Length: 325
Image 1 (cartoon, rainbow, N blue to C red):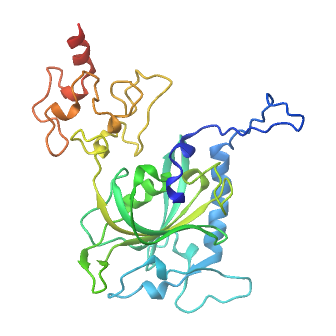
Image 2: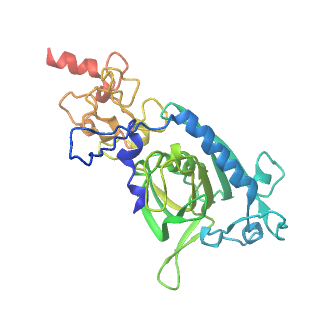
């Protein structure tokens, strides 16, 4: 599935392509540097605003008390010069900064890779369930991904389970704003029926998508559109250490990062500086004792395992040093 093929591609800062000369001089390579993220964001944002100003959706199909939104019913259509907006439709740009509109189109500001981004989020339904995913949880969704030209490059008509940390950054920034289904029941045809679930569309710059990577039908530096139905979510504990993964985001930036320039810097998400973020580290403080055995309660709190310095022992690197003395 294309949506999963991005974990290492997106985090790269420089993409290198090699090309051999026709004279078989294999030692010569061509280095292609990535575009500047800030400059690319400006260009992408202009393209997204142009799209929003020229496209509408079938709003009347998503209005009414008994409507159960499904992105399979959503139609995004270009309004050509000289055409009149069809009855029951809404121009996307008319929803921006419009508190009186029936639908919300957020211009959400987020920071990723030290760059300020804007992702536009159309809220068809915020979801009536009690749960909302954290940035690193599993989600059960239906979705469709396309370019601004409408070319669909990836989709899941039937519900699929995805880990948000394996996806492009936009998913981690957007789905946390939606709730899951209010009710889940067995349908007569043997499938699962979801009622009043989260449903929306994200219009995202390339920097929150695949950036300099290209996919089939999607070129590098392409702004993208993802329609999605958020059905269910499950809290993740990736390293099975008893601490939910979202609580191991030590710097609170909604990403799992390691400062490879200074592994002693614990302002990132790696307590012991071993190069493995805590969410994937079974021994967060490298004291030789798995974190799960250091008295962490079911809510991910350190319980009574607090040292004299007030630091939970499973995170206390000074305790590690004293144990080694």
